[in-house]
Image 1 (cartoon, rainbow, N blue to C red):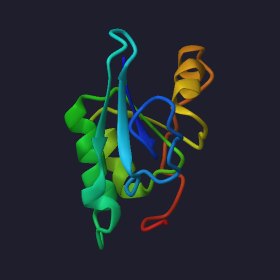
Image 2: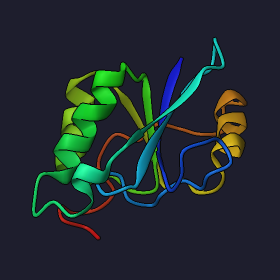
Image 3: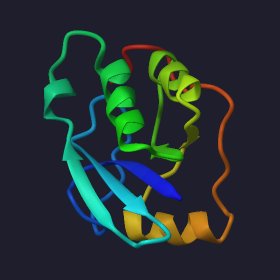
Length: 120
């Protein structure tokens, strides 16, 4: 299972970023191989518009099964959903802890965005 986290840092000890489209990094974790990598999201940090769409495209390009974030806007959610990526939002904490929660079945996917567009 490939999980992608909106993150404040580049490793499993980083905290989840509450923002999806304007997070600093995406931390990518394959729960089967235990491989971890990170991708900078710097191109979207100061984007005037389209940050969520571009961020969702980055996550889709990774081949994610799940995107985990604090909050997800409607445009990003729509792109993720179209790509077949399940979204878990409304979570917070250290990524390593969230992986454990996910594997224990304690994190549930959502069926819609949880904030309006252009949320900061």
